Image 1 (tube, rainbow, N blue to C red):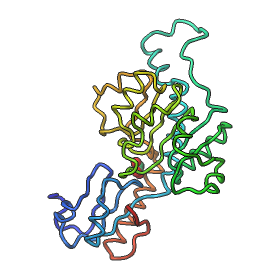
Image 2 (cartoon, rainbow, N blue to C red; image 1 turned 135 degrees about the horizontal axis):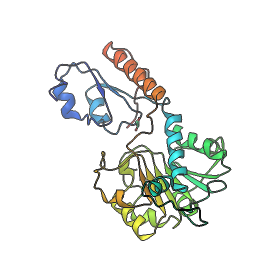
Image 3 (spheres, rainbow, N blue to C red; image 1 turned 60 degrees about the vertical axis):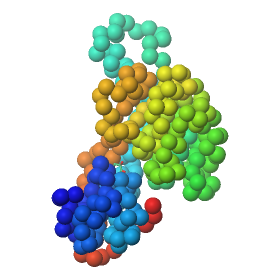
Image 4 (cartoon, protein in one colour; image 1 turned 180 degrees about the vertical axis):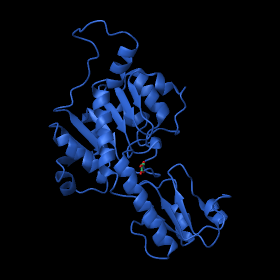
Length: 283
Ligand code: DGY
């Protein structure tokens, strides 16, 4: 709050909570908040709107990188890559044998995508290359939208009960917080794998821990957690069927450069009193 005092523009990271108090600490000259992320759950949009402050984000440029990571997590969890690497490092690789580290098939499996926006659709396109059956649940998508990426729109319950992999691609808001909870986890197959590259609080992590230890689902691969950073002694990290990476969905050199340019363009436009090239209009 000390650092924003008197500024006309704020360049925020997803780790900066920008609420009305921060906006007021900046002062009435604050014109723009430019978030270096596509997600903007860290910003109180209503408070910004009330104060006439424009908010920008970075849509589009991180779609492919994030979809790549979601698919990398899906494959890594299915084929137990982290466990395999740890197995060798622990000196356990003594011979080849038929039942070591058996995983799940990806080709021909059913993928359930929750949230069929840009990133959800990009994940669906990748699944086509693996001849997967793709189910999608998204209140805002149309059947035609889904069909354009080879997916079929279904209810949440249908998606959960039929999918071998469930991948989350929703923004974090009041409707999606703890969307994956004890009840929804129980609707999944005991062999299912959950992938989260959206936001940590979309999953009730205590319920996930319980589901993973009790065999309600088979495994989880998470790019996002609740909280972030996840403490190194968090119980989830003791589970062999959990793979966690540190919120790196958009972490490629080119993607982060594009995000930086987009965030700078938004910031400059806002400070100069022009419409933002990529303004947040809802939330
Ligand atoms: C975003 O942009 O919202 C990602 O979580 C980080 O790139």
